[in-house]
Amino acid sequence: MGMKALEGVRIADFTRFVSGPFCTQLLADMGAEVIKIEKGAGDDTRHFGPWLGEKSIYFNSVNRNKKSVRINYRTPEGMELVKEIISHCDVIVENFRPGTLDKMGLTREVLDKLNPGIIVTHVSGFGQTGPYKDRAAFDCIAQAMSGIMSLTGDPGTKPMMIGSVYLDYIGGTFGALGTMIALYSRKKAGDGQDVDISMLDAGIAYSLFSTQDYIANGIVMGQAGNRDRALSPANTFKAKDGKYVFIHAGSDTFFDTFARIIKREDLLEEEQYKYSRQRMANPDYIEEVTGQWAACHEAYEIETLLTDAGIPCSVVADTVDVVNNPQVKAREMLRILEYPDGTKMPVTGINLKLSKTPGEIYALPPVLGEHTEAVLRDIVKLDEEKIEELKSKAVI
Image 1 (tube, rainbow, N blue to C red):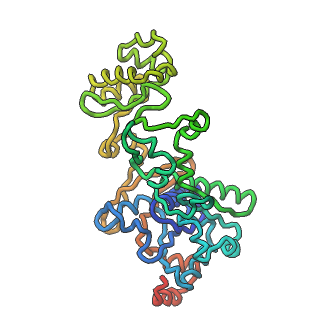
Image 2: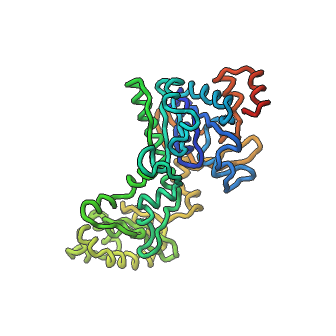
Image 3: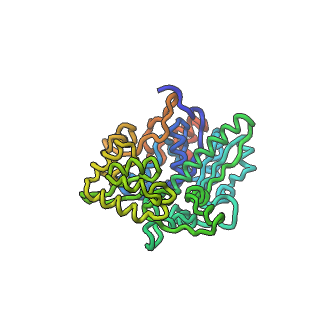
């Protein structure tokens, strides 16, 4: 493997749970040296299920390719070690509530003296400014406040969360993107800056056009189930074998092909169904016709028939389907990492595919404090006597 894209970039990682660790994992996958600074029992998710033996699948899903340093940074000596590590880093990433770094004594003024040009990436529920900045938040809170839950689910049902911690991952992705932009800016301008990522902001950005439609037209968008809001037919339909399949034949080109496949060319002669805007005025009938046709065919038969005709279509997969999907396998999006004790830990593959500097899974998710002595010895330049002294004082 040649040089990695982010080789030479060193990150002090104060993150836990999902959004921050996913941010730093994305950067680590691309070659950044990520030093995960933990205290006490470490990242909370080390103690969350599901489990594989004594190892947390939750923690391992977002913490590969990192070094774990365990330091009691609530002690003066521990904080001095943290500051020394920071002085050798390009970036700090944290997902505490706003103001926590300041309370730890790591104000922007202190950081600039320690390391002029350092970039600080903050990933939080509501950002570093605004009246809600000090509120506690998890993904579910951001989904609720952003309006995403009011858009999700079948009409007339209670608001629904998306089936993943969606905004944690989006917030982490924005954090990695913002960090990269700040690094590029520093290369040109020479100075560091703060990157402020809010999961609420991410939710607003990813909530389709609901806020714009309300501001422009006074329309309050509600739940639509799986129905596309702009095109028809585009929804899930139950097949003959009981499986569901998503058919998206809503554009005029796709609908022309679809109508011929289901032998309803007559729909192409009627003005109210021929064009997408008119179909959206009466989507129920189009979906009824589509549903009747789907009910006569098995799910994978539908997927093959429509896909071969160029129409976007997929059987609605469960986890077993995903694990066995040939496209997922071809893209190496599910990998197995083996620990020295023989434990085989499943993880997701590399999301970003670069042709010249591809990402790589080169290190197992770390055991708590696994790299403490190596980091203090190799980066902070402490000798063995000093390391032993710190251990005797329970600083490390």
